Length: 359
Image (cartoon, rainbow, N blue to C red; front, side, top):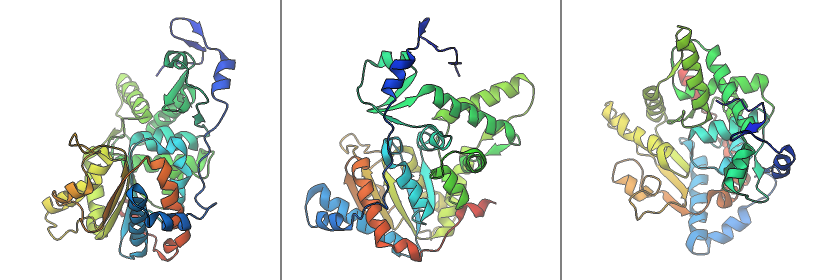
């Protein structure tokens, strides 16, 4: 991790603080799903065609998950919707018992949520100058969203600090992220943090590729420093991630998936059905409900790791209660989540508290 406190970039070019402040002048405001009632528009869209009808059916399926008292709801997040304005949306789902388990990318959990939990912000790009100029100002870009690299490095160092405080032994990503939530309870600057709320509500978070994020820099530094000093260090156990999530699937029985994007998090949760069978639980249920919101294409054989219909051929999901929504998730998730919040099925749901399974 580079020390940027000397305010230099590139060769020896000084950072223009005024220009940087100008570019980082408009914060991203995260949408509040409680502030508006999306039910009328979702109902109307259900009677339309194309993606509108798909969204209407997907929203109904999510409401069915919440109304099913036996169903454990798993929120799966890939991509950058948290940075783009959906961060408080996901936090509200945890706060109101609308999700019971989370599987996400490291970037979603660390670079976006934990980052803001420490008091930092994401910014709207009012303009997009040459990316080399952004680099000279230590501004990182996610499409039309900016992050202050110096603040992101604070996130890296905080991850390192947490790692240094732990007993040197293997940890699943769930166990380490729980320590991050504990840290935010004690030192955080944002109440509506997904990581913090998950800790408080015993909602486990899994990141199967955890080090593919700012956490990776802090954890590498932890191991390198420990090795230089001849002391043991903590490690992340990816096998434990898979084992723990499969254990939840076995214990939960009926499950529903609300998936934003796809890729590794999507494959990870879907594979728990196959893993349970390999462990001898041949009566394990496929995921009963499934919704995926994505802009990925099917023609290259990927679609962020297959359509839900294709996944059924692998014995992972039920083909009867699934819906693909081909849309940019930031434009449709607020409607889906607001609809579900205002329909209120969550009010009668029991709190699962799956994190207690590993206490």
